[in-house]
Image (tube, rainbow, N blue to C red; front, side, top):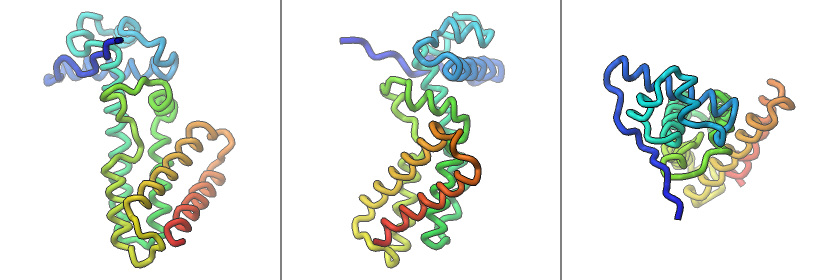
Amino acid sequence: MARRPLIKPRKLATQERSRATVDSLIEATARILVKEGFDKASTNRIAQLSGVSIGSLYQYFPSKEALVAAVIERHQQQIMQTVRSELARVSTQPLEEAVRRFVAVAVKAHRLDPQLHRVLAEQIPRVGKLEKLETFSSENFSLFRDYLEGVRGELGVDDLELASFVCVTTIEALTHNAVLHQSRMLTNDRMEALIDETARLVTGFLKA
């Protein structure tokens, strides 16, 4: 049985200089993933591009998978900052407006470094911490579920847990494919139309 790669950092950077070293390593890892892909990334290549010695790299990260996990975590934090700030306003909005905002936020989140997002979503082996790349986290699934509870009287569905799963999965699948694979076809006007049509699809399901 193949051993699982070590994906936890060896130690945390606490001082400014060590944080700068770790930042350089994570940024270099992201650049290599985008330009060369996961399979061609290596700790030697990452150290070379970052200007950090291979010995210093191994002081902080035991493997390239650990570096990729750090890239995923940083990218996830950027996504969550965007999503949290945008979705804070949905609780007081009518159903159609709230659903459209959810869809628009998903598009905006996928547009945060879409080339990196594509590599992380499609090339990385799903092991342990590497499973955690997601645009809508469980936190936002819960937010969607809580919003539906507040407008239950407008809905034609009874199982809000299942409805939330269907809606969030639909939004994620459509926006992921649109931004990461159809961006050349989808002009700004078409993207707005896609947001409108996705919101109409989800709202129609919720009211049916």
